[in-house]
Structure formats: structure tokens, C-alpha cells
Image (cartoon, rainbow, N blue to C red; front, side):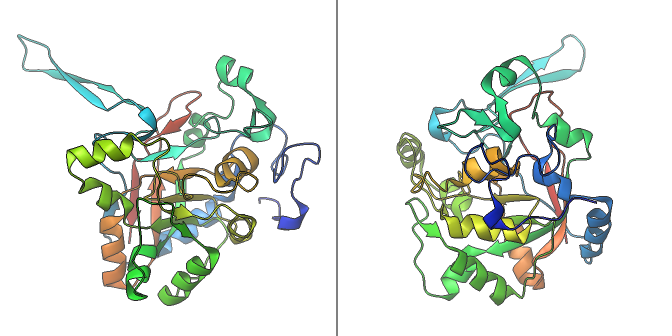
Length: 317
């Protein structure tokens, strides 16, 4: 069984390490972080969420967005016809940060301390497979109980006009209000999903506007507010991973680098962050069924030393 989660006030666990770290919670050599919360018990319990047998992919098309943000490479598929035989291969070129993705623990470190999860140095990133996403795969992927908080639907019900492509911050008060309105309760090891409507809005942009938006560095976008209160809430809910349909999960540009969600979750806690998840159909089905929890399965690419990966995610209601 995983160790008990210490209080938020006890962070950092490694006192001479960076702010907020939970290094050593699962051992000095741990490479799973909060995915240790996904146990045989949580997996078995999550199967009880399958009531209707409805399967929904959470992956956006790999060639979306039309223009990748942050200057990243576009997806490309080359179909190779092995003439004269009636046989084809395809060769895919992609940046794992461009479309739907899990950010791994090699992706983003503490910017001032120059270290990654569990005190991993840049030299180790370049010379070993430490903290790679392959470790997730070797341990069965990201599989458990998913919970969707539908910010888009809640904001509409409250008459809130949401600016998705501006620095709109989703607060803990918002998240608690959404959970209450949906009748959602959380369990340790849950995988949190937040639906803002961002993917749908970006998909609908004309090409010229999509290019202009992607050219901004960084492109402003809705997301969870980076602050101590948000971090405390995420910590105390004991999630295994968090994800959203936003470019960075937290609002960008980042407003608070002391309580930077990317730093604390990826480098501090070893908690995967999902970005650009396509949650449109899932949100529709959850609303139709009045059921916002589900069985979730994600098996990333088995790349030794992987930095990030398409999730290959499926929600089953």
C-alpha cells in the first residue's frame, strides 16, 4: 500500500530541495510519483464505474491543432507504398508536445534549481532513461477512476462569459462549485479532467486566426490558477494525475512562478499533467447520463526515456 499522504504544510519533504517537493515519499529511486496511487485496489474499484459500456476516446487528432503552439513541429504522416506489392507502411513525424499529451517528469523541471523529479539533473536526462514515460507503461499505464469537472457547462449555467484564449483563471472556488453542482465526490487515486471548451474553440478558428494565435509566445489561454490554494487543493484530493483540454492545464501566461503548477506537479510531486485532451464527447455523455465518473485507461508510447506521449486514452462510462 502507498504511504499516507502527508499534510500540505509538511512540504517540501526534502528540506534542502526546491519549494513544494514531495521527493522521497515513495523512495529516493522512485520514478512513478503520484502514479503509485494507482494500485490493484483502485483499479478494481474503478471497474465499478462501467455501467453503460460507452467507450469514448480522449485523444484529439494527431494533426491538431492546425498550427502547433510554442513553435513546435507539425505532425506529418508519410505513406510509403511498397510497390509492386499491395502493401503500405506509414512513417509518422511528431512532437509529442503538439497535440493531446501527457507531460512526463523529464519535460519540465524547477527553472531556478535546474532539476527534475526526485532531484534528476539535466545530464541524467541526456545520458539515461531516468524518469521516462516508459516506466509508466511498464507499470500498466495510467488506469483508474476518472472524474470530469465540466467548467464550460457550469460557467454557461452561471451566465459567465468565458474568454478561452485569454488568461482566464479557474479557481478552487470554481472547481468546488462545479463538483457540488455535479454531485461529484473524489477518492484517492482519481484522475482529474477539466473541460473548458478550449479544444473546440481552437478547432473552429479559421486558418489565419489559428496561425496568429499560435504565433503568440506564449499564447494566452484559460486554465487553473497557479497559486498556493490550487496546489493545496490538488494535493489534498490525492489525485494520481490531472488533465484538461487546455494548452497547459494552468492559465497562461503563468501568473505566479512561486506556485507554478507545472513545476510543483511534474518536478515536485511526479504527477502527470495532461494537455489538449479532447473532452467534448465525454462532457456531452456525462451530462446526458448525469454521471461524471468513469473507468479511464491510458497507455502511453513505450519509448525508453520518453519525455511526453500521446495518451491513447479511453473513458468507459
